[in-house]
Length: 283
Ligand code: AMP
Ligand code: MN
Ligand code: MN
Ligand code: MN
Image 1 (spheres, helix red, strand yellow):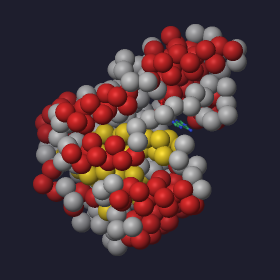
Image 2: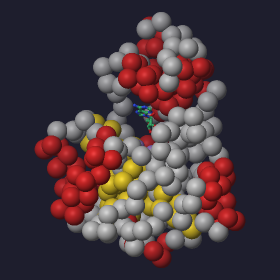
Image 3: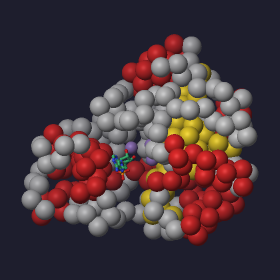
């Protein structure tokens, strides 16, 4: 059913969120979320904690992850839902995906130093909850703390995106590999926030087509990372490609995120909710 307050996308201190898995579970429950998934970047280290916290609150839970992928030279995020969080192929794939982050962070820091901002690596590390998962978000928090920018959005715009001084290009996982790891672990793969990518229309069509061919089954339609005016286009694309639809806030932090857990419109009735495909995986 579409009329369900499902929130299947958010981040904890295990990646680049500022709340622990337990605090997120409590916040989701307090906000009226009825089905929840924690989807940390490239990492399932918070899954057992999130599930235990949800179960203690009587909140239904699906396992989750958000895998970083490079497709047509652009970073794309693939959400996995309802998988076995201890599956070896998935754990190995995610460990390999996390692997380059430390070096990339050092390079970002060197570039920022050249742009007149010294000590960014050490500064970002203060915000890191998981040493294997240093991300641009942690740099953004440091640049706000040190007064270089007023908010994290501005840091991304001025320093951390393509063509800007602190941006270091990175090759993430391949689309087919990410989908395979999720499927082999028994889950469903979902294209995260498709409106956020800088692909051309042709490349976007290729992303959806290849994702389907690899066995991908869903796409986020209602997400805190889309403007409401973008929901309709991706609802249409979900139907065109025979994909189920997902819904999630992409909540990272009470201070930074515009969309709180559970605070989104419902999916349209014409869509197949992704949770119907994995009803037997709800815990
Ligand atoms: P990384 O995986 O290290 O490349 O970092 C990507 C993360 O940066 C995303 O998951 C978001 O949390 C954050 N991010 C990307 N773009 C922006 C933006 N424009 N404003 C704020 N946060 C952003
Ligand atoms: Mn993030
Ligand atoms: Mn994302
Ligand atoms: Mn996310």
